[in-house]
Length: 239
Length: 239
DNA sequence: CCGACTTTGTGCGCGTATTCACAAGGGTTA
DNA sequence: TAACCCTTGTGAATACGCGCACAAAGTCGG
Ligand SMILES: NC(=O)c1ccc[n+]([C@@H]2O[C@H](COP(=O)([O-])OP(=O)(O)OC[C@H]3O[C@@H](n4cnc5c(N)ncnc54)[C@H](O)[C@@H]3O)[C@@H](O)[C@H]2O)c1
Ligand SMILES: NC(=O)c1ccc[n+]([C@@H]2O[C@H](COP(=O)([O-])OP(=O)(O)OC[C@H]3O[C@@H](n4cnc5c(N)ncnc54)[C@H](O)[C@@H]3O)[C@@H](O)[C@H]2O)c1
Image (tube, rainbow over all chains, first blue to last red; front, top):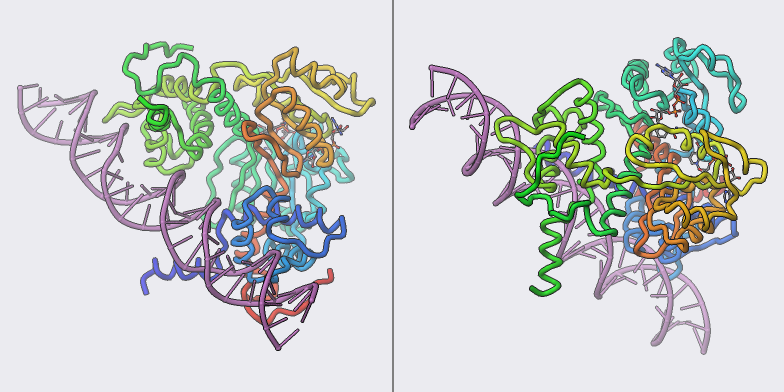
């Protein structure tokens, strides 16, 4: 069997498509909402509506976890919550460190949406002497020099980077060298990491730019109506 | 020429794939970096490396904007910056309102990464009497009751929602009713809006959950090694 | 116990995205 | 001018994701 065939087989048997994984948390959120209202059973149609997706897509997504629905009835909310949580790894606790405790880091430190999903913030680190020692959301900010110790001692497995862009790669390198293989990056830079490390980024500036693009479309295309590719543009490069 | 042919031509000539649009801001960031270091010309290989993508993908992306490269040489940095900015609509100013000035809203209000791309925060709104009137990043927080006036008077075209989840849909409805067609949502809810409105969401909790999924994979699959789809699972639903 | 009804799980076709690989095009040098 | 080198732009193959539509499978009333 060629390596390629092997990879295909692995995908088919255990691999859950990335697109599906990205939606599972949304389903989970919708399910928790239903749970609070005491709903016991839900159809794919209802759940899909609550999650804002097509019902066929929802069913296909869930089918990747196994067959947890009952035909003619729907899905048992509680059981589905358990299965999705389990698949996402939320049945265990994840230890998180937030690095860079500025405006954004502070907001993150106090955010309840983390703890409620099994993410425990076990460290706040910063380089600024004025910030180190401050108590934020019940935790004392530690010095970045202690990064490696903190990661090792507390078993940090996810690092959240909220430093300025210029510092992000350096901090990332240290974090990775300490054995962390999951990074959530808020700094507007592309981090380079070894293959085994997962980096996800949150970039609000990019989101705004995408909105601006579409907004401009609605308003009638880019300024100066000539289509890109037209031959008669002028050299007005200088800002 | 029939309307349909016209539409097809427009698509072919002007329609830029969503996946491409989402990457243009990344290229732009990389280009600004090069610009600061005085680079005049860049090859697709170099730029792709800086942006963290495959070079063929980069070239194909850029080809959607027209042919702005020179074979044998590469792309002129300054010119490319201009073309991408123009395509994204960053050559004009966008007026933004931030709604919900709590932990996150505050961080956003003071964030420099917005202004530097032509996004001007023209309003901060909140429902809390204790927050209304406060000065944050040089702006006075206004009462949410004035939402419609603020949007109309200042020509707000993008709304940033940073309210609690429970309030988001209501606020969103009001914003949309006021004519805003672009929304950036930080609240962990699926917003329902008319077709012509674009909503983009930023959800850090989802990103963490995706990281957790992959982290669990690395550690050897979900707890209790049985592959999903196995027939012998037990009814251990109760938490 | 049966037949009507409901909802799941999925085969299939379609469109989009990604990547490879190379011909075409432009610069550069002798 | 011509030969050579470098890099773009894109055709073609492959992979991926989406959603329709329907058979299979279960429920429920009679
Ligand atoms: N504030 C926002 O709304 C927002 C939005 C989008 C992106 N971002 C990005 O998030 C990051 C943080 O933003 P912010 O507004 O909190 O900035 P900030 O300047 O308020 O905070 C950055 C913090 O990082 C600390 N720091 C600097 N170098 C460090 C190092 N080497 N190790 C550890 N800590 C270090 C600083 O002392 C500071 O406290 C930036 O990269 C920014 O571009 C912020
Ligand atoms: N803080 C974070 O790091 C973080 C991370 C991810 C997501 N979020 C989400 O972002 C949102 C805001 O988070 P936060 O931490 O800033 O919460 P917060 O409670 O600190 O702030 C919410 C603000 O919204 C205001 N508000 C409430 N109802 C309103 C209404 N109807 N109109 C206008 N304003 C209203 C409140 O007065 C408050 O000031 C929440 O939905 C949260 O889930 C926050």
